[in-house]
Length: 350
Image 1 (tube, rainbow, N blue to C red):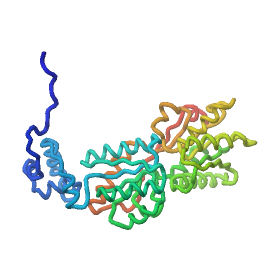
Image 2: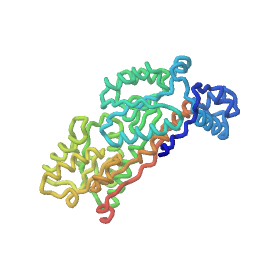
Image 3: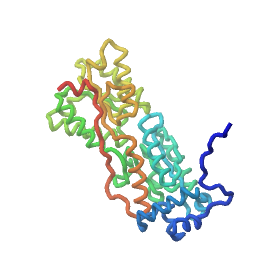
Image 4: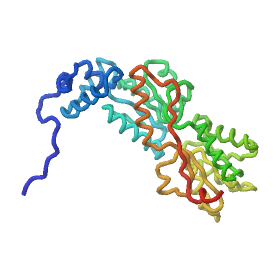
């Protein structure tokens, strides 16, 4: 019986592939090969970049990371700190970043900060100790070391939630204020004016900006903030916060027509609370959220949401990192195009 075919190996010898061998194979200088492998491509043509990358793949070259890190005081590792990996949106964003980093020859070290300042600082210390090439924070919170390290030579990119300590920080993600404006505009177009807002803590910039955009647009239509009931509860678990807040809304004398949640996870909790009553969560009210959670099409076809597809985050984040390393960082936030995911019941009724 013939043996199963073996996967072709890129380098079958025991001899370690060197940078010089890659350069020779690509017909470029060692310095050029080194720059391209390390992501510095501003002085190389597209053809040269492709030649080097092809040689790396064909020869199976892997840089000696430890020695290089000690010599250059940086490594191939990029730290990604996520505020809550229990949130499918953040997990999907982290996955997108990981794929994009892999395509550029970098390794992701993923940590969950649980939105706790001391945990975030603990991981920032470790990223510095490991000579991380950069730190990407998906949902940053204010913390002492964040401010200190921002004033050092560490490279930071903030994703999905702008930096809490500096407006000029490099940001990749949704324009939270404009998304809030666009949600309010859509509701007004559909004649929806009896609205309640559910939110958790507003000390994080994303939620506050979403709320500000909503209220500003509604105010232009003559619906002022004191006419819009707000339900708020403390806590990091948005499922529990949404559940508790919805209980407060159900006790209102005049029940709102639209339940506008500042995150999809809040909407999940609120919907669960309605299911425990005699009301119909789909017939008696309209739910809106933010983030376009990747689970929505599978388990939440009742939810209308606005967000950025997760797969867009990785390429945009890595493009920002490469621009920084090439000494041409963006001068404005990198806003990714957001879109609506609307359920059939909402689109059919105007």
